Amino acid sequence: MDLPKNAFKAALRAGHTQIGLWCTIPDPTVAEMLGATGYDWMLLDTEHSPMDVLGTLPLLRALAPAPVSAVVRPASLDVVEIKKALDCGARSLLIPYIQSAEEARAAVAAVRYPPAGIRGVAGMTRASGYGTIAGYHRRAGEEICLLLQVETAEALGEIEAIAAVEGVDGIFVGPADLAASLGHPGETGHPEVKAAVLDAIRRISAAGLPPGVLTLDQAFAAEAVEAGARFVAVDLDLSLLQRGARARAAEWRARLG
Ligand SMILES: O=C(O)C(=O)C[C@H](O)[C@@H](O)CO
Image (cartoon, rainbow, N blue to C red; front, side, top):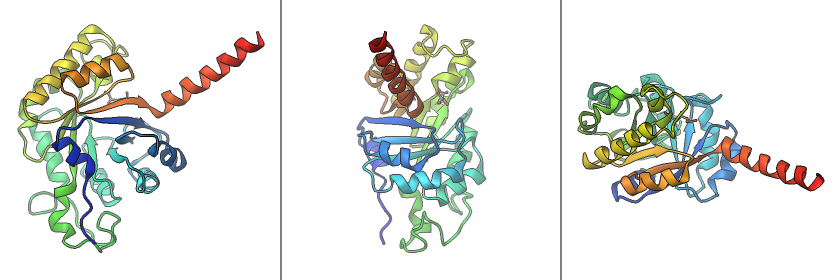
């Protein structure tokens, strides 16, 4: 079996904007259904959800036949979590809370086998097609997409240094944590936060990498794309469900007076 291509990595390299959905519901049926709704990528979040890295395995399986790319977010820059996510078959990773070029280099090392990095080696994993992908251990890095998340005022100061680290495929700006770091917790719509996000997107783009962001404000998502964002999560599974449920309930409350 050939090493499968990472369509998400290829699309980012080609400069194609990828529209995403942020997923925190740890249920393969929900993931399978959402996988067929038309998004380019789905973020499986283990940082802020009741799901750990191993909990993404049934979701990765559910999404495998769908025309959507799964991106797994480990809870932190943790070599063991990253190794497990990769062994489970995640090929695109978003690593949160990267503060410096040194941490970016550590993330790159975590996704590469020795001698280039420190990823632990195993044969019978889902990642290697249970040992059937020819040359997997030599070539795995070709199809791994490593995205790093900057989300503090300090990290914004390091964007160019982080972007210069070889092996980084994209940089994501986290508006919620950035808002808190800038002194506006819970206010991702604060003008200072929005300006900082757009400035970060422009600088990441100028540094030669695709920028990413998450926002449920569709007008701001469009501004982010205009500023150069290339992987943009425009909604969240729980928010979609809540909006739909509320709208239906409100409709019937109104009908019944
Ligand atoms: O800082 C951010 O923004 C993020 O990292 C996304 C958050 O985790 C959250 O909004 C997703 O539920």
